[in-house]
Image 1 (cartoon, rainbow, N blue to C red):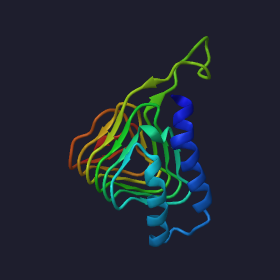
Image 2 (cartoon, one colour):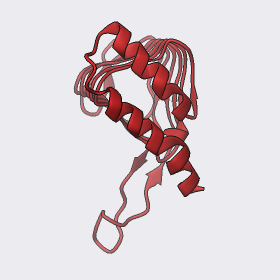
Image 3 (cartoon, rainbow, N blue to C red):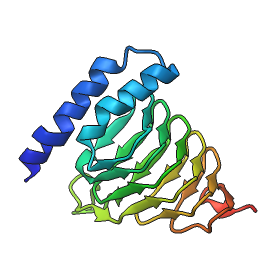
Image 4 (tube, rainbow, N blue to C red):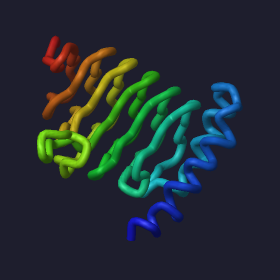
Length: 169
């Protein structure tokens, strides 16, 4: 199954991203890159915009809704499912990780990953360099401020900031 996923999702998506990364981040190019990447994700709605230099690990576990924009340099590590609902905005260099390292024989290198799905609810906005960790849910219409780390769940229609992210308002 892993070999199939690599051939069906990973390699074609990485090839598309490699071939289009030279294009500037103009609206037309962002939409083209999103359209070309769409078939190589588990699911993807209409109006997907994708900036340059975005990395997807296990795209077969990533579902993206309608009218989602992912800016330059974002990183998605989908050891477990990542669900991004409609109208979500990602500023540059956001990191979403649905797993965490564990220790084996005193080393983090070969420990089994500690997995948990990540859900980003409709209308949310993630600021530059924000991080969402495994098992987290970013509430509907919530802003995760720049350089913040979300660990766990957040309330809808709120602003979260800090390390770890706490509700500001």
